[in-house]
Amino acid sequence: MAAFLQTNIRMSSIKIVPGKYSALTDHYRTPCRVRCAASSPGKKRFNIALLPGDGIGPEVIAVAKTVLQKAGSLEGLEFDFQEMPVGGAALDLVGVPMPEETFTAAKQSDAILLGAIGGYKWDKNEKHLRPEMALFYLRRDLKVFANLRPATVLPELVDASTLKKEVAEGVDMMIVRELTGGIYFGEPRGIKINENGEEVGISTEIYAAHEIDRIARVAFETARKRRGKLCSVDKANVLDASILWRKRVTALASEYPDVELSHMYVDNAAMQLIRDPKQFDTIVTNNIFGDILSDEASMITGSIGMLPSASLSESGPGLFEPIHGSAPDIAGQDKANPLATILSAAMLLKYGLGEEKAAKRIEDAVADALSKGFRTGDIYSPGNKLVGCKEMGEEVLKSVDSKVPATV
Ligand code: IPM
Ligand code: MG
Image 1 (cartoon, rainbow, N blue to C red):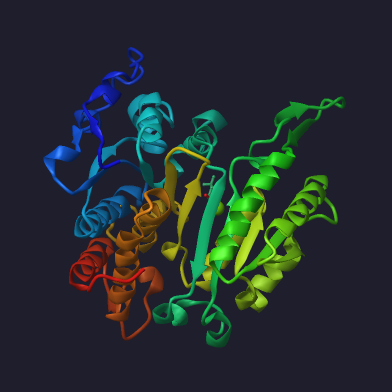
Image 2 (cartoon, helix red, strand yellow):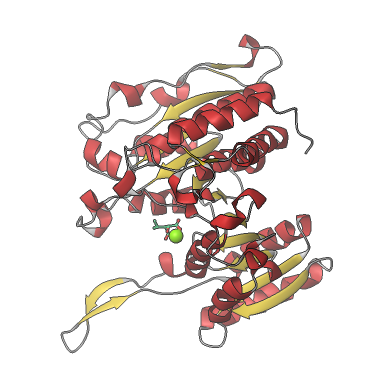
């Protein structure tokens, strides 16, 4: 990457469909800057696509961008950011949730940082014109099948958890969610008329063996780097797709003798997460169960506003985003918690660019700002200092600057 010498070919080669993108503002048309390692000797340059999206997305992305820039610069990294509209923001601009230009910029970047998608305003749109469709296109077309969702209870936030201190304390798990298959994408799907003339809604849970194997491998590798425990969550007592899931995951276990594999039905897993979350190290599960369990796990940590995620493919850029939504009720009020997006930027550095030191700087800075008592509303408890999104970002930034280089 450091030897990257490239001019603005990428943007100019994008096909602009007449009319379709004409509403894209100059702001979004800012061309990629020349990526030229020679201009800053010894610096590595990366091209980052920023997709702020809707609701609180732009606020948290603005804050995370400055933190990413700062942590990167302290480790000799430079970033070229390209900001593009997605979701409702893109619908308002050009009438589609995922403009081709946005996808191309994302696809050609080294990593993508996304804010949030959706809002009341577009809730009544037809399905193909809903903002969330942008997420599915991104996931599917970038082939980011492996979604890593860590849920860690930071010592500073243990009181923010709804669980008793002794239950929540020390929770540190990683949910590996399959992201491009299962019921989210399975065919047949849709709302049809059956033989009695009645409407039926159809969604199909379907997994091919190779889809299970590749997510299971990511999970085994992840568990291997953590505490060596992997729990595969399925519904193999009912669903055929889960029966195959369990069979394939079990078959792979012999390749990872250092990982202790267990299986759990999803209903039990939902209960165990609340009863004794510390029993979990790495969880691997399908798309829909991963969606639900990761929201549940987030509550153990105190707030969904704390949880980052990484979506990775076999090759190509990864997609990094907080797991919270667009929170339209607090959008534009400087109330959002930017920490999940800041921590997503840390995941971007670690998993997307392989820059672990810069990632650790961000993680340490977040812990530092929290230990100084700064809290947004969602994680506030008496005795701490209530701050808004921007101020929380400034505090993290100060900590990135002042903390001694971390050891990875
Ligand atoms: C998530 C979200 C999405 C999902 C929604 C917004 C479509 O809940 O990333 O967890 O269901 O995957
Ligand atoms: Mg979800």
